[in-house]
Length: 490
Image 1 (cartoon, rainbow, N blue to C red):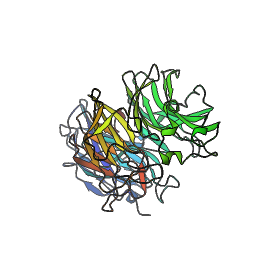
Image 2 (cartoon, rainbow, N blue to C red; image 1 turned 90 degrees about the vertical axis):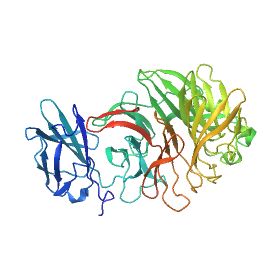
Image 3 (cartoon, one colour; image 1 turned 180 degrees about the vertical axis):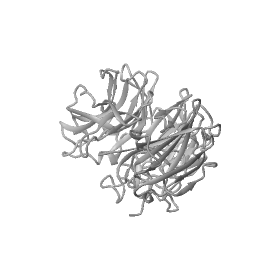
Image 4 (cartoon, helix red, strand yellow; image 1 turned 120 degrees about the vertical axis):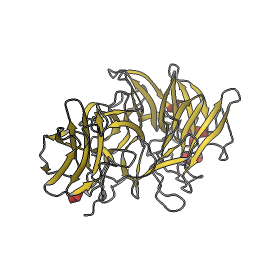
């Protein structure tokens, strides 16, 4: 088999208590007979399938008195062997740490050998020191493409995998929590319903897992894939999904029709529900788009709201409701909708937007200063494109009640994105755009899964997966796999 990672054995370095080159750096390193350019680089590539049997690790330290320890870990940092010999069996899916140290200082080199069935990520341009968290999968939402498997994956700005964990089922919204753990909504087994999970990065130990509590008037509830926040105090905020009965006769349905209810639920650190809200109660069924109403039938639950993002703001939440085509701000205490942007009941008029607003949107993010960013999918429920997928930023004027387009970046010629997508702004003003299910650009090339934009919307760098694959979101993160310490801010 030809490795999809050809070539990718990766060497990186972290200096602890010193700078590399002050006595604990390596001046030469050879792995499996291949000499690596330690002087100019800290990341190297070698085909992992070439590391059959015993792999010899040869090195020369800058300081002859420095000591060296080799440790072998799995992709999530779980220690497998310590004080390993210089000739060792290093398999795909493992990582080697080379610690060079003196009594006063140390430098750690991390050597990753990605699994051969891990999706390769191609980086282009300047993505900075940011890490990228993703859950690559098959675009068809069915079987995985031949040769690849599902993983939760963290890569650096060169596309190098620095952390990975095989996933038995689908995973969504993989990110770093305020406490430095990893959180996600995932299937713990193939085919079962979603569970919200918190992982410890160093070893992927499950810290906590739960499913939501049943809200009043709901017949059932389950974890919704779209959104999960875990805060410093241990409280959580997430989107939830279930079923309840509603009178749908006004739009041609049953008097007791099944509705796929979506909502928001907050829990404290002890798992006690502290607030919740049901989106259906804010919907005017008669004003839903024609393509949404066309989904109504007597056999399946009607998805009338479809929450696909939840953003915590002071005193409430900002939600993206895809079915009615609107972004709403909800007051946490009363449950009232404070304002609506988009859709037939919009409180705002769009200004300076040649497309007159968004369509099939995801990931509405509040930037402060009355600015809102979102991913504009430009697609309807019948998967008919109405333009090209783009990220947008609107300036809201609460006196004039206008939403002025002040920034946009389009996936050139891509058409609409059927589902998924992310926009988030970094502390330095740059943006990360996750392109969701977007597959091809207008020139026929593979669309990136993520683009880093400067504050003015100029593309700085991209990450790309193989054909027929995507990631639901691509969240930025910071940290280092050699320490197991990760952050959601620089």
